[in-house]
Length: 116
Length: 114
Image (cartoon, rainbow over all chains, first blue to last red; front, side, top):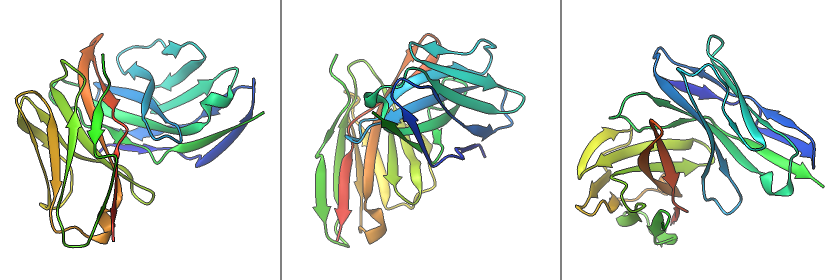
């Protein structure tokens, strides 16, 4: 079974600084997707960024980027120029590849605090 | 497009009762997944429906069931409620985008069992 581990239950960062959230996963599959989701206090889960396992290039979405290390099964999220609105719970998630399995396996989450 | 909607947003039930939660996916999305979120267990997959068929199921007892209608709206039902069923229930709908099936979540239904 696939597992996703987020070893940092809580992190804090100063506004405008950079923070990196860690995620490791375990799978025997070669085709899969990795995601970072953000859940602000209002609880609406929002997709931040995704990475296809077959792509060597790290995904980037504006201030958010990932460091995908496939051999090490590591998938960290870097948030640059942190803003107060970035404060939320961040979940790392895994999905097996293929078009018939949409199940997401989530890590326990990292609570990010942004200090003004 | 309107996002994923879930009703009701909050619900209080008594042990032993049953409850039905509803989810309307984003227009055009044919897959709906359900997740249970609790402080202790985190986010756990319940089941996924595609074109009215359950394709995947998580490790939950048979008290948890669901269905999907022809318009892709989905309902999940929990019978004989237990205190441990208190949770945030999230629904997500999926679309194919750039080769990846991304899931979009609703705001959730907060179920409290007393």
